Image 1: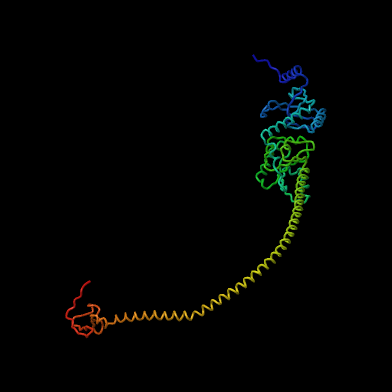
Image 2: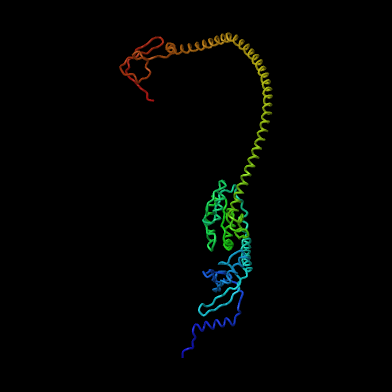
Length: 438
């Protein structure tokens, strides 16, 4: 037996009747706007979501709409209270009617909105981020940096086409001061703002030695565009950046978390330019003041030195005169002393010269006497060595062919040798030679 069945229309109709009879006509619901668009007929269509507590998952989703008759009223009410426009990514408290159509299905018709909830949620989120930054001890790190002096080399983070960047650059260049400004383009609104600015900060960080400070500026726009600057990751990067960061991203009555952690927070790009120009002018004025003080100090020092030189010159002149007189007297004394010493030396020299002939005569006689004695000694020695005197003492001399024979080696048998005595000589013939070996 086949089970009984109903049509899809019948099922949807039952669901619609059940919703109409069992549920209240209207509810106040908290949700986040995930998608929002306005059609050409001025009806507004939205997707409402609810995230899990950790924010990683969507736990509920519903299609919603605001009919044209209510949309203008609700949008103006929200803008007057918050200064912002309804857009993606904000949390809202809305009054809804539950609709279920057999063809179009389930949807919510938004009939009213409470702006105070959105304001409170934004404020709560900002306070939570600020408490986290403070708890990590980084909220005032960038503020504690000192602005370089002078402040000349500026890395600018902005959209290349932003009117605010053009105003900033025009104001900086028309001063004629030697500012160096380089644009590092970044997305300044929408969901990619956070990642784009952090990536740009990383680029500047890699060449930080080239820059004195970083400027983050944007032009006008809706206040909701500032929500991207209420980011923890972006704020943490700015707070811990090694160069001072100056912001000009808000409006007169708006302030972001980025402004809270930056070194200096100003409202507009032109205000940032005026601040940097004022820093330079203050530095220049300080230099001029220091230059004037230095000139005055140097003038006083020169005057004191001139006076000291004049006094020293007078003292030196007086001292020179005194030294001159002292040296003159000393020279006169030396002259007199030298003259006396010269006379004494001349007298001594005369006496010495007078004694030289006597000393020479005495020394000559002494030298002659000594040499005579030595000659006598040499004469006696030669007399003793005379061959005649040697022969008289009993010695004899043997000659061969008139020459003295000093060794038996020169003799041969049969030769005739002559032996000389003091009383005469004798000839002998050699019959035998006997040579003694050593």
